[in-house]
Amino acid sequence: MRCGAEAIAPGHIVHHGFASFKVPGSPVAVALGAVFTTTALELVAVDDFPTVAWEKLISNVTCSPLTALTRRRLEILRDDAIAELAIELATECLRVGAAAGAHLDPAMARPMVESMRAVNPRMGSSMLYDQLASRPTEYEALTGAVVRFGRQYSVPTPMNDAIYALLSVASGGWAKLE
Image (tube, rainbow, N blue to C red; front, top):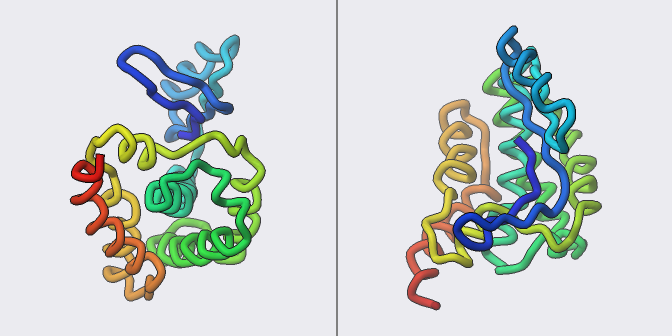
């Protein structure tokens, strides 16, 4: 799922850009996709859903922690040093995903981050939006997943380990900062 939207209040959403949902291929998924052909939402049935899921996780472990920790929107990726950090996070996630059986190549990291640098810089991430709203963040499901799967498959994840440590400390203190 890739949807550039931000919940700004109950029942109020700002759509910042795209809306594309990829789901496991099946006759039901194809039929459901047909329902959305006249809308801005693209629903696509895919055969290799594990790879698609890892690709989505890669975008989440690069953008979400960096936006949340800096309290900045995606313009933060326009900074070259932050982009290099995002590439390292993505590279580790690609290696872990490949070890888990997804069809991924660590060389995909740079082009993936470069494409993220080109999106609307005013967009944020779900983790940033949760953090700004003093809601619990999903760092365990995102960065935590890369760290746990990395250990399971014996793939080192030092950058994700560091970001995970920062997120685990910061998540407990965000509500107190407000």
